[in-house]
Length: 281
Image (cartoon, rainbow, N blue to C red; front, side, top):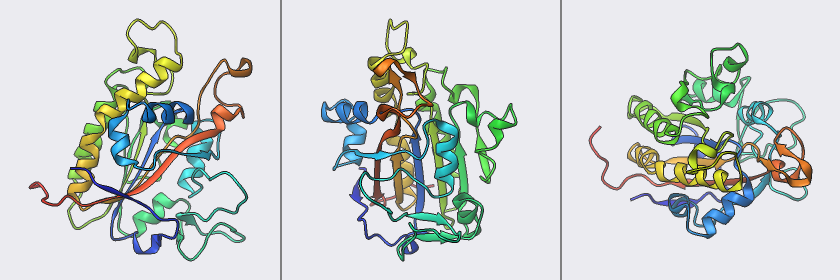
């Protein structure tokens, strides 16, 4: 059974790093309002079990995948509304930082990914959208800091079985990490990103309804991933979006513009408890 508890704002990440696995899971292009409404309506039961306090609305550091992830990998995760600076969980050391505090785990590396690797973590990237497709030089930029990075067409935006396949691959790679080594797992889930109409029967174009349908499909695929993390002793988990998607609001479509439906993202962080009776590895 999956059990979680909230990560308190005062949580000292220096006491977490090195002792727990870390999972940073990005549902690419997921709108905050859609995520919150689906949760409230009982349409995403897996996420409801994981997030007893629901989704928190935060501000993304980017309005499309590439800049948002560059910021994420430097430790700049979505920030709460209101006056900052907002203390960060992980950070790359640099002069003048105003958002690092005593509870921030600060690493001396170009990215937090490389900083965690230097502390013994096996760093794993399961890519989804095109910015993780290594067929182009640009597609090799975001995965570059990871010890292992995975992408294939069946993990991408055009495959209706991408949620299950991404979860299966993440579980496989977690099981390959020795029990005495910690893992940092990053997944870029591609399902909600356009074209998401393939998740809604009969849909000929993307819409808020197909956006939600893709999220529901992802929710149904998630349980084995959290079971695998629990079997390894639990984890500190972040689940969020990198940006939202416009569907005609103020005449705008897609993303890469600073409309609130794009810049406001769902965010949650929690501690996943260890499995009480771990399955044999």
